[in-house]
Image (cartoon, rainbow, N blue to C red; front, side, top):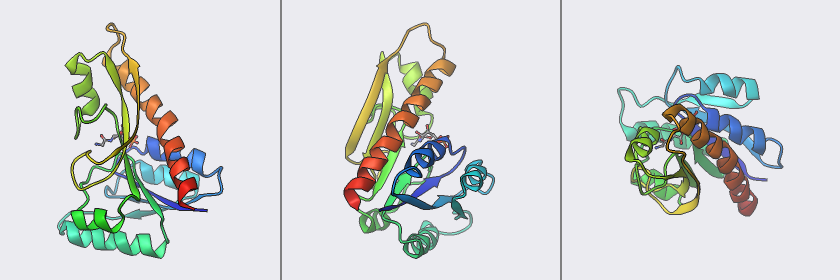
Length: 187
Ligand code: GAR
């Protein structure tokens, strides 16, 4: 049985999809960590009966925020960290400490369109193949070895709202499964 922590910054729909799958397995999610006080992911954590922690970066150094996160990770004996819409770049020290134990999902086919507004950027590019990427985290922005990519061919008439829906549904179908495999292989 492995212990997962999910890091979020906002809506938390991927966190929800992950939790709905993982909570049915032998693995556990002792906590969710979020850097934004008003994030909807706190509401989701409450409904899922998952402990949550607010760790702000506001008016402090990244080092100090990460020290607080590390204390939580140690206290909760976390094995694997899944970033799910967590809009922070982790420091090289943090990433090194949890090497090969942190994963992320990005709503584009990396290395294309890293960073924010990836769906808008993919949409505007005119690329016919759109999709999502799950990768190990290093200290770059949406870099690190790719674990899995899933894609679909767009219909040129589709509006961005439809594309957005498809990409999110692909995330919910792919990320929880990859995380479960990772947890299975961990313990
Ligand atoms: C997701 O689409 C995720 O892939 C993206 O943020 C969204 C969070 O939604 N992450 C990135 O863009 C990382 N660079 P959610 O809070 O509803 O899961």
